[in-house]
Length: 224
Image (cartoon, one colour):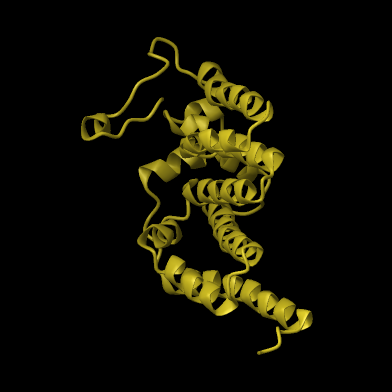
């Protein structure tokens, strides 16, 4: 029977894997050409350099990344690029942490990381690093990791921050119910408030509080 690998060896393997995550993001960042900032990006730029309410809906409700960008020196586009790269690196590191918790073999994790980095959606965030998609994915991944660990508090905090980044995290909140207890209901109430309050504060006068784009005809709608 083969003896298990020493703890030091396993630890060194995971450290190498964490370094691989950083190198993969660096490689992709330097090898994938960026597109020009889109009209969506300029809405976030407005929020990072001016007033939140100056941006169109629904961008004005995704306040976390633009507010964070205000505290980073340099041109506004580079601030968002730095946030996107940090968020995507964090996503890969969280994948490693989940895999380590589930005792997945390191070589399997390395292959999985390579597949994730080849995913079109992942590469889109590198091609268009001036959006909030990467930060939203980071909070979704953090919520999944917290759920696997049974950590209600971290799940809730990640969800609250995620709601201020991208609305998609709202669909993960029902997963908290499987952990039971009173906290899921408290978290749901706070999450609803976080979702609605910015829409009440920054909402333009004379328009409906909740509306949707023409995408709704194709089965996709956004509360704006």
